[in-house]
Image (cartoon, helix red, strand yellow):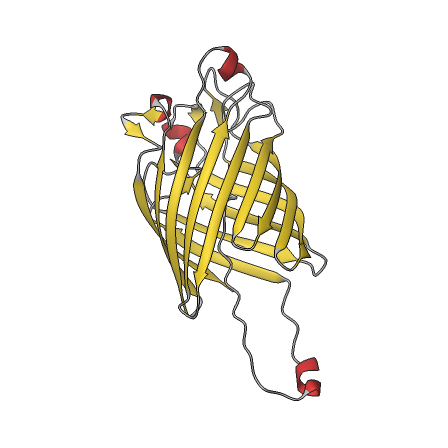
Length: 255
C-alpha cells in the first residue's frame, strides 16, 4: 500500500565552471518505481497471505512541494478474509496527492490524501464493507526521525463497517550509514479502530514493529525487514496469523 515507497536519488558532484553548471539539465519531476517483495506487509499485517507481490508506481513532484502519484500491487487479503460473497479483487491501486516541504534545515512536513482502491467486481459478504478506503494524513520530521498521523474518512475502513475516524500513528527512524549505501530503520505503529468495533466490545486495534536494512546497488535497492505485531486472534484467517513475526525481502528500482 501507500506506505513507505523507497525512492533512490543519485547525486553527482564534479568540478566545473559556473556556466557549465547552469547548462546542466534539470532533474525530471516525473519518476517511476518497480519492485518485488517476498511478502507484502502493510501496517504489520500481510496483504498476500505471506506470499510474494509485484509492485510499481509513478510520482510527479513539483518544485513547490506539491506531489501526486499512483502505486499498485497484487493482494489476496480481501478474499482470504472471507469479505467477498461473489467475485474477486486482487489488485490494490493507491492514488494520492499532497504537499511537503522544509521549515528549516532539519525540519520537514507533509500533508496529503490517499485513496486505497481495490480493483475487481465483487459483492461484499454479510457484515463486511467494500474494501476501498480513504485517509488524510499529516507528518512531521526532524533529521532522521518522522512522525505521521493518518485518519480514515469513509464509513468503512478496509472492509470493517462503521469505522470512520479509525487512525494510525507511525513513528519511524531511518539512519543512512555514511559512504556505504546502507540505511537502517526502526518503526513503531499503532492502529486504532473506532466505531462499531469498539461499541461491540471487539477492539481489533493493535501495534506493529519493524526493523529494517537496505542497500543501494547501482540503482537497485535491496531491503530486508523484520516485522511483528500484537494483533489478536481476530486477525487469523484459515489458521493463518496475518500479524505474526516475519522477515520479508524486497528489491526496488527507481528511475
